[in-house]
Length: 204
Image (cartoon, rainbow, N blue to C red; front, side, top):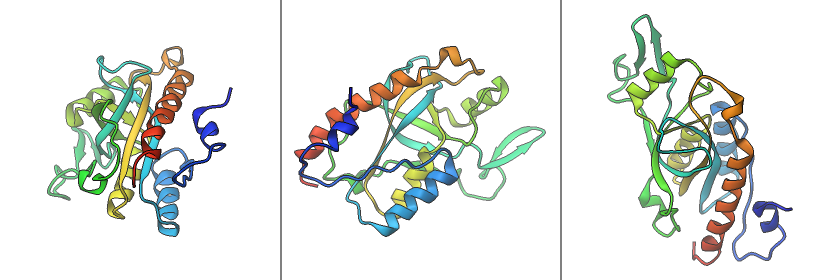
């Protein structure tokens, strides 16, 4: 069976679409997406991916719309715990990346999804102490390895964008038996195909 995205590529479409696999992690995603946005003009960018959940209210297989993100590792690891840039007196506040509604005035928004806060890290966190520390400092709902970097690039270049993710696992000491990447990807694909129908009927 073809996925929704594969099916889209076979249909006659009103808008033109490009699909980019950004790569895993902050550096890969920041470079590949920024390069693409500087070479070509886009009216809208949809970031699709999977994420881990910090919340018992967000289960594996759930779909979420990330409206606020941040870089969880941007700071200093000290004997007294992790310190943010604000705590190090290197910034007035710890950098956050937020959904910008002013950029998306004519964009169909995924209002049927739960709006959540996220952290972005190059590490899949397994340490109970570090998980507790991230929870206390940032109070995130979910975690990814690319989200904030792509949102930041889009916002800086004034490209309308949203970040939507499917939950593949709980953020906890690693147990692959509790992960379900296949289901998360299937949910993501199903959601995107339905959302795409709204895009096709919109005047971007």
